[in-house]
Amino acid sequence: MLLLNGCSYGWAWQSFPGTNLSKSGGSIARSVRTTIEWIITNGKPDYVFIPLTMTSRFEIAQIMLQNIPIEGPYVIDGEFKHYEIGAKLSDSCYMGYDYAFMWITLLSTWLDSQGIKHLIWDQCNSFDKKHIEGFKGLSKLKLVEANPRVIPLFDFCGNQFLFDSGGDWESCDDERPIFTRHYKDSAYPALQEYITEYMDSVLNEKVNW
Figure (cartoon, rainbow, N blue to C red):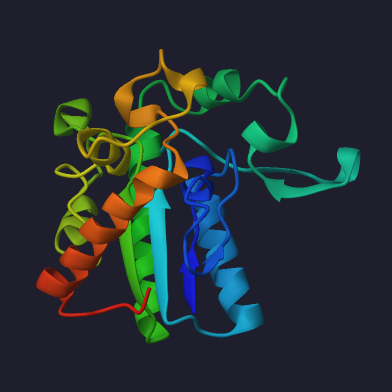
């Protein structure tokens, strides 16, 4: 059993040969939370794949007012002022990066502790270190960069790769940056091939797709 968990970019991989927990508007925190919950409930998969969504996303819970469990504001309410709340929480991209590096490290460590093989990569951020120059407290990035189960975040972006591979995207995204477009399912075999080659050459692992 293969398990995939991301946001709408993960959900776009409709032909993924396994269980796809991806949800439109999901955050990295959601990917971590629901991956752990699914494994505890259903048992260990053979491999877990985590395409990282935008670091600016977060989760809320409005159980008392709207009977809505923990979820991302992008999903539960289109009028939710998530950007305004995000701006109050952090006046830069610092917090998003900091939490992303923390979630990556914690999830990978937990999966390792369970003996579950996994691979994590950036799908839509197009990370650039110039955006975090001068920020203190990001020493945990060293743990991410030393982890072979994380495709180097500052060298690879899944959506950019799909574009460079000639993948088609949804026409409604024509005006969006290349790395935030939603690519059609027909583009994903190229990503699968890249992942397969990475697992073979770096991790010495193979997956029965």
